[in-house]
Length: 87
Image (cartoon, rainbow, N blue to C red):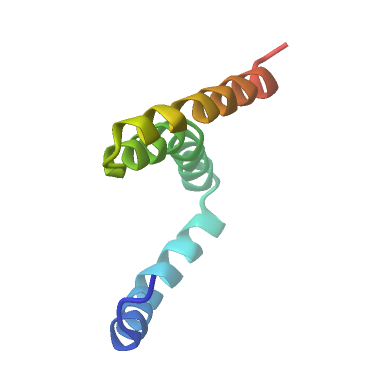
């Protein structure tokens, strides 16, 4: 989705300084690197798989289509749990 080229370039320039400082501190701090890695993993594997499907269901106006989206989503969740479950 394209918002604005000017806004994208401005955000990139504004975030390059803090991004460089964060990268430097993470490279020289193993504790910070470990904590941020675990936070990202919790977000990407725990919160995101719940929030995105719920957002899709909330955006769908037709009730029958919402119900049609639940079955594939539930089967994908079951497959994910089966693959990622500890032995």
